[in-house]
Each structure stands twice: as C-alpha cells, then as structure tokens.
Length: 203
Image 1 (cartoon, rainbow, N blue to C red):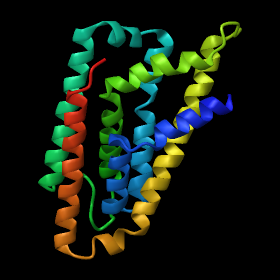
Image 2 (image 1 turned 60 degrees about the vertical axis):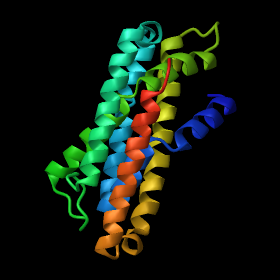
Image 3 (image 1 turned 90 degrees about the horizontal axis):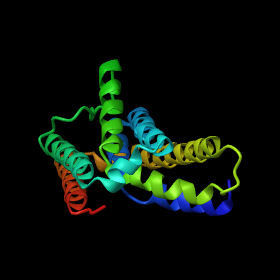
Image 4 (image 1 turned 180 degrees about the vertical axis):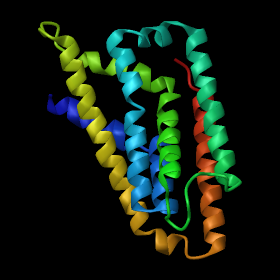
C-alpha cells in the first residue's frame, strides 16, 4: 500500500455521504452501540462493490446506461424512503438508546442497503483501485483485495468515530422533544438532498 492510496482513500471515506450521515444519525438517536452497528453495516455494504470491481462486473455499470440508471433510481428511491421514515419517526433507531437483536439487524440491513444501492461506489472501485495496481504485479487480484480491505477498515474506523462523537453529545442534542423533532427533520432533509444529488449524477 502506497501513501498516495492511503491518503486518497482517507479523503474519500472522510467526505460526508449517505453512510456517514446514517451513522451519525444512529449515534445521536441510538447511542454508541447503534452507531457501531451502523458503521459495521456501511462497511459490509462495500463488499458487493469490491467483488463486482474485482470480477469485472462493475464494467457493466460503467458501459451500460440502462444498468447504471436502474441501480441509481433504486438507490434514489431508498434514500427517499429513509428520508420519509426519519421524518415520520418510523425509523428503527430508538431515542432511549435501547436496541434489541431485531433493531440491530434492521440497522445493519439499512446501512448495507445505503451503500449497496450506490452505483457510484462500484464505479469508484472499478476506476480507483486499478490505478494503484502495477502492471507487473504478479497477483493483481490479491493486491486489489488488500487495497479494498484497507478501504473497508478506514470506512469502519472513521464512521465509528463519527458515530461515537455523535453519541457523546446526544444527551445535549436530544434534551427536548422539539430538538428531537427538528433533528429528525434535519436528517430527513439530508437524505432527501442526497437522493436528489444521486438522481442528477451521471456516469
């Protein structure tokens, strides 16, 4: 792994996106445990994109406008659903910080879907990783797996840090019902804005 790859991956992971926003929401609304679960789910959501890039399936999204737009608008629909659920307080995150096994599974599933239904992530792996694999590499697939794992570790660590910080200040943020309401509306607006941004994204 080169310093260039590490720094580039660090900047990309640390940049605010749907996964980071979801993890912060989990930390604020559900506490440290919920934020760690969300960070884990977002990290697991990278695996299908990684496998697609390594196997060459991501080339389909890169070359096929129909495939790209189908996945893109499914992602848009899911982000809008997340916005609506947050706005209507129908989400899976508990304000009292209590989370049973079922809610944990739901948080992971939602986090995975957020990253899974992002076609730009597959294209990112398809276009980004090969740049750091030398032409004379004896095992290019193994090298891409190593770089992908570094990217996943960075994702979990940074997202977990975001979530832990949000959990640390949650008692100050959700000290009243009105603050809780506006906080949920703020996250709903953020998801809606990300949906609009994804809808306008071109290959």
